[in-house]
Image (cartoon, rainbow, N blue to C red; front, side):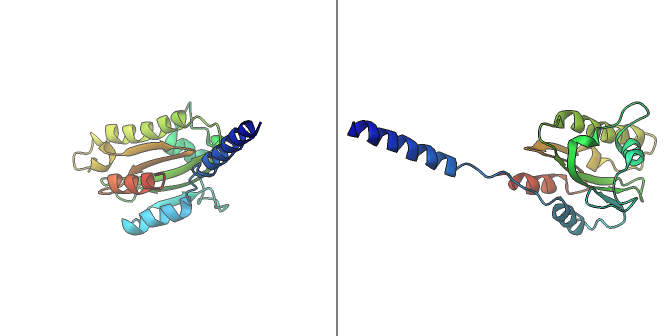
Length: 172
């Protein structure tokens, strides 16, 4: 009986040790991450949209979602997005620059959401063929990542790899 109790105690303690070592979920402060990216790469001429804002023009309403990420027949379901920060600079058409950080709701189909993000960048690359002086390096090397409940895309000249690495490191 003593052996049984000792064995049970060891098993319970082992289980508790494993549970206590479980990795806490990563929580990204999307506003802080966006500010860091904007500060590091001097991104100040574009437009920043945030789910934290309630001021018209500072968040993505249905018209902006359709114009940026959708088309006449289909738009991404932002009802699956818990929070976001998006930066889009269209002030220099031959030098596109943008990124988006999204926290998806539990159980959301992140792959379907990313398909819209990729379609936007693919369309920009296709449209760039009409403008031979357009720099598309940031578009052709754009990053699209799904990590836990987070999705991000990055198309920032000289920053795609570094920004992605910085965000990925927060999950290790």
